[in-house]
Amino acid sequence: MSQSSLSSATPSISSPPERLVIASRESRLAMWQAEHVRDCLKKLYPGCDVQILGMTTRGDQILDKALSKVGGKGLFVKELETALEDGRADLAVHSLKDVPMVMPEGFDLSCVMVREDAHDAFVSNDYAGLEDLPQGAVVGTSSLRRESVLRAKFPHLEIQPLRGNLDTRMGKLDRGEYQAIILAAAGLKRLGLESRIRALLPIDPYTPAAGQGALGIETLSKHPNIKQWLAPLNDLATLYAVSAERMVSRQLGGSCEVPLAAYATWDQNQMHIRSFVASVDGKAICLATAQGAVASLEDAEALGLSVAQDLIAQGAASLLPNGLPQ
Image 1 (tube, rainbow, N blue to C red):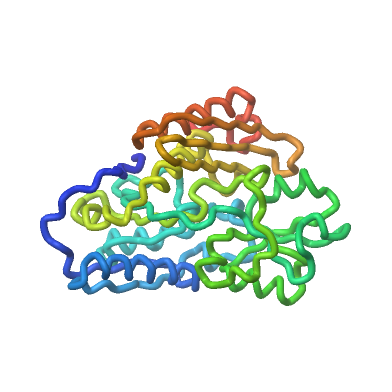
Image 2 (image 1 turned 180 degrees about the horizontal axis):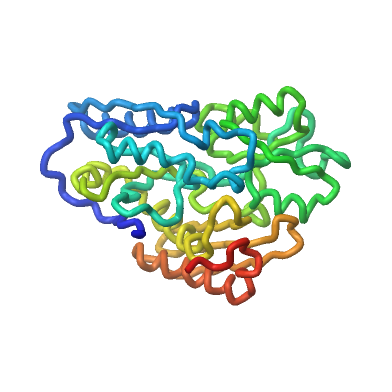
């Protein structure tokens, strides 16, 4: 398995593309993301014909089981990768938090675009915040990471799994199946649903997942010209931050089976990163933070590695269902 070979450098582009096909899931949020990338590419290359290939993934089809039980986040990308391999698409657009931490051989994470708000959002029709929910209120979340924090802070609430695309989840809330749900703020904002957010949850203790709020573009390693065309869309601050986060997650075998958080910010060559690994019931947690000078992708990954090593030294391996990755 190869790591991402994404570089922050912007290479020279010999000739602009004439046609590009973007593979995307067909949910409304995924299509918004694909259309956003299409529009950015059209602005860069006005003569390019940019098309979107909408697809349904296994992750979209299996809605009656938790992701951790059916194969994890990779379920959302496999069909898109197949479209890249057989030539139906040139690039695939993903929510970066859905992209496995180790890229399959032959694939690159070739572009990371500017990050939207990375916070988790509290959404409810009847309550202003988690503190207002009564005993036994049902809160929906798709994330073991969120579940661990909620169970630790609000043991009187009933935490229930919540699957489906964003519109499906909102529909379940509006039908009264949940008193509140926790979603990524980024998706709500991108779809113009910011008014549904009752509160943004603080990074401490509701630390986001690695890559949350960022868009990643995947391509085949054998097509370096496509990576070159995408290079102007890279956002350096986001790239450094998510590279550190994904290094933490990679070292700890991050997946849907692990309550793992990692969030970094980078500004004026300084990075701050916060990460935790917890038990699902929230009774055990290893928490680490670090800050330091970061002037390159290698620096960012080194800081992420130091945080992962701190968590491991605290005993994080005992909280991982399969132990540390080999």
